[in-house]
Structure formats: structure tokens, C-alpha cells
Image 1 (cartoon, rainbow, N blue to C red):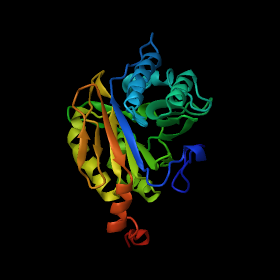
Image 2 (image 1 turned 180 degrees about the vertical axis):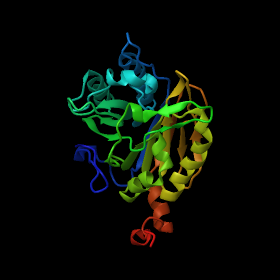
Image 3 (image 1 turned 60 degrees about the vertical axis):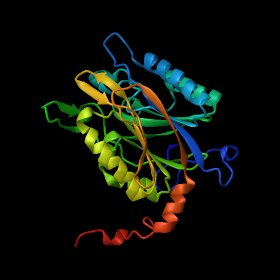
Length: 302
């Protein structure tokens, strides 16, 4: 397992480490539509082609970390066809290998949502985020909290019908600092973001397929997760219509004090750029002691 949990984040090769004081990273949020699978069509070719075009555009603008939304590569609402058109990470299939080759060529890192097949013969599928860099696939995170509930208009969100739950949080060590990755509904569970922050994450990335019915919750919870963990919170969403779901977008960057410093439009296809100052995280944490003065042993109710 290349991805690391709380105890020991994955580290890049020494030659990729940056000098002390260079703790800044330019991110690109690719808020783009994603094709769905049909009986006759595998969506991965079209989605990968679109991603590579956007990736080259972002790299040309100086982005070092490029983000795509939830199950971008396979189509979030491909539903039962996800079993046919999911990706294999270990070893990487041809789509992920092509993405890794592009990262190697451009010298960038990419976090992208995929539907991931488990070990051969298990039948398991996971709603996953993969992290890819110049050295190849660094690891993956499997969504912990699947959405299985009724929307106000009676439609059902049925992620549990297609995917299995993950079993661990993930934090990755990149050249600039530590990044925790989560997926969409994980935002509602503060433990996921807190576990990443306690493990030293300076940036929390959430890959989403944000439904318009939940737009208000994103405004509140993304700010809360950033503020309570004193970390950058970055949300990247797929956008557009997928069957009876309208994915709103609204991707954003929230600073460690809970201020929304970048917000992409609703229902628009665009790329947003922002430079994250990771030293600002450490300055804030040193001055307020929020994380160091936790008392975990006292949090159980007696």
C-alpha cells in the first residue's frame, strides 16, 4: 500500500523535496463535466482526453497540483455500468498509465476521482481518489461515507448499491507539504478532516460531485472544516447534468481561518487557480494551539 494513514505519510524521493521556506504550491481546480457510461460506450477514453487537455493547460499556467472531481474518470452516475468500466490501480490500467505518463512529462501532481476495482475476483468496487505524480501512482483513498439517502424531492442517492466503503483515512507527503484527501460526503464527518490535520496535513482536498440540493451545506461545512483544523480546504467538483442529478460545481478554496478566497461558478465549466501558502498554516497553529491542546482521553462520555 503506497498511500499512508495517520502514522506515516508517503514521502516523495529526496530530489523532489523543496528547500525550507518554499512551502507554497499552486493548485488548479478543474471543474469540468464527465461523460457517463452506456451499454455501447466506455466513458474513460473521452474523460481522459478531456483531462489531459486540461492538465496541459494547467501546467502551462504554472500549476503544480491539479484536481478533478469525484469519479471523474468513469462518470459518477454510470451506476450499474461502473462494474464494467471501473479502473485497476495495482498494476495501473492503460488509462491510469497514460495519466501517470502525462504527470511525468509535465512534472505535476494530479488527484482524480475514479471508480476502482478491488482485488481480482472479489467483486469489490470503491469510490476512490488516486494521487499521481511524476514518479507514478502514489496511492489512493477509498470513500469512507457513502451517500445512501432520500433527497427532498423523493429521489434516492444510492452510492451503497454500487460501491463498498473504505476503511482508512489517507495523508500524502508531497514536495511542499502534507495533503489529506477525502471525497464529497466525507465533509459531513469532522473526524475525517481532523484525522488528516492531526497527522500533519496542511491541505485537505475534497473531490466531489456536488449536487445542487446540498449547496448550502458546502458553504457552511467547508469553512468549518478549514477553520477548526487550521488548514487549507480545497473542494473540486464535477459539474453538469448526469441522469436525474444536476451537479452544481461551486468548487472553492477556503483559507486556514475559514475565509473563502476562491469560488468557481455554479453550473459553469472552468479552471480555477490559487497559490496556497502552507507556512501560514504553521503560523496559525503555533499562535492558537488548537491541535496541540486537544484532550482525546477526555472525549468519551461517562
